[in-house]
Image (cartoon, rainbow, N blue to C red; front, side, top):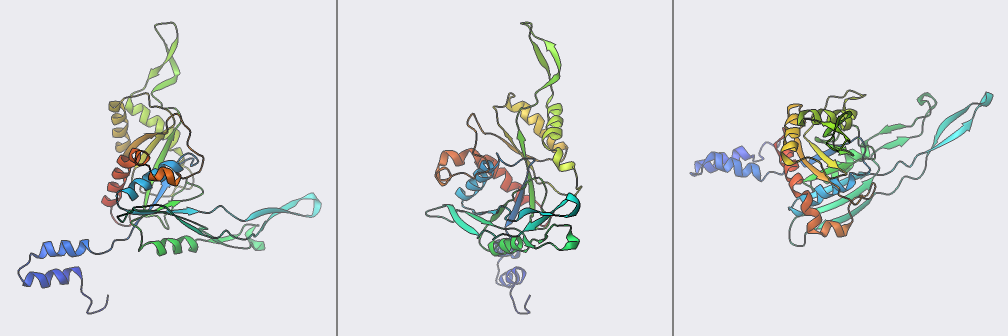
Length: 316
């Protein structure tokens, strides 16, 4: 810092000499200091049906007056070819192609406020042709992603990373990680053990909320505990079900309590409803303008933003 540059503490000290309260002036000066944006990475076992959830959360933030960037990874443009080798064997080699141009589009902007939702699609890695010692694989480095995040840091409040593969953390760039658990069938009964019903039919043995939470962790979050074993701090978990949940709010509260005990902070539940969501597609601009569409994500978006604001800086 330059020798004569004024800091929040210096400003507060000068104001206190004129009769102002030091702590009040210090707090006000600190609030005027620009903060680094949250760089959020969602983690999921599968991602095809989760784009609408991520887009809805981002839209809810934008409608609340925040400036949000969806930084999406472009599809890989490198092509695999086969080169004939002696004795009937063939070896893979990589053929470079023209990388796609970055695209930036405004998905939604407030007419009379700071709220903004922007989508930026670009390559996240730079690759060099493979050398003989690389066994046919290209050398990669992630300077394009770092540059894109740095360029957006002064403009946006939240930067949401949207990778092509969602199942691994990003310790290099992300400042926060949130899990998205996708539920096909909610485990409220044990289908392996059946009890006779009143009409002669068989029904599964009911599970307790704690048992259901254990099944959900094993079924939907097992990818987090596989290879590689990279230590990571999770800022919460959001659940998306493709069917109406067969349990009530009290049951879900018990599931959330057990998740919280296991270190997985619950941030909310959502359901896609009877209509399937478009595969690997963010919400359309018309949906982002629809208050009814945005409203269904406002509660989860509010809890998630509170969790991000409450976490220590540079935890991951």
